[in-house]
Length: 77
Image 1: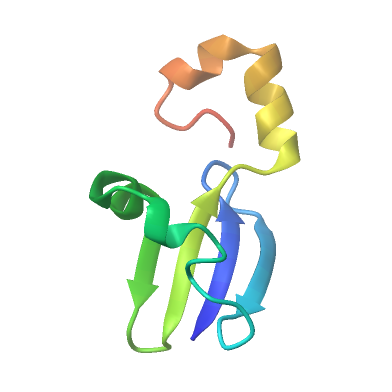
Image 2: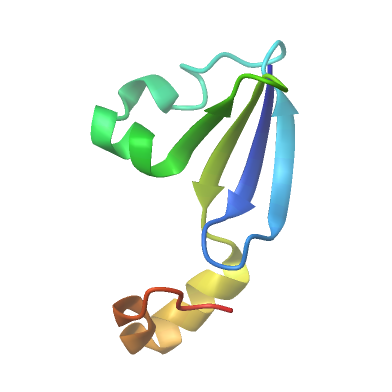
């Protein structure tokens, strides 16, 4: 299985991992609640890839400097 990390706001690719080299427990996935899992992890069976939504440094900085962006449905275009 392949794991791909991307920014939930700007959709930038942040990196990827081959899960055969690391366990899901080591990544912290097993400590997430079901709600957290449904919010940040998507599994696509057709290509056996897990997509993980996170926040890139650019978007994190923009949101910290402009908290009002959290109120919009798509804060970073």
